[in-house]
Image 1 (tube, helix red, strand yellow):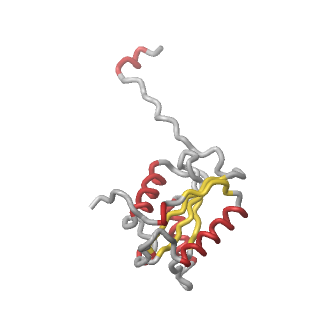
Image 2 (cartoon, one colour):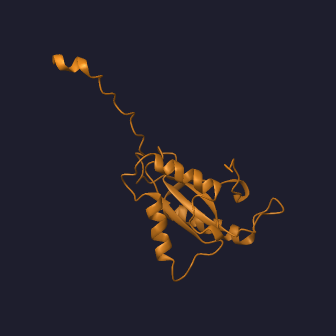
Image 3 (tube, rainbow, N blue to C red):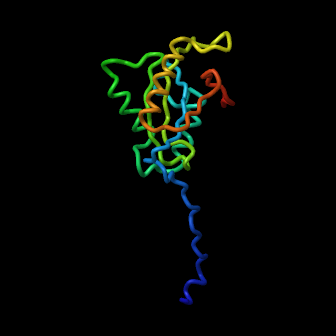
Length: 156
């Protein structure tokens, strides 16, 4: 050992990063994130999208573009034909510790708060399309909030 090492504390190792070992697997996990149509891509407004963006920003994604960049690509691609309620787009992630690798961002109308325990016909059709995409793209697990409501503890 070098005698000069005693003058400096031993460097601590950073905690290991939990990257998804199955970012390209054939049994992916997905999450449906309801996003109000009028917010477009503002992650600071919708509770679930804000929490998802926060989790994505904690660890760098080495396989896919960061969430903000993926959202910007969608925004650019849909300038001529804007997305409407019941449209959706997909983002990919490898930095969520294997919990989810895919996110389906389902645009919902801001006035689509259900008065009953049934989904709107537009949301039902959108979910059918999402399930079809899950089948074609080897998504084995799909999680979604109850009634597609964006509820949670918001900071206000």
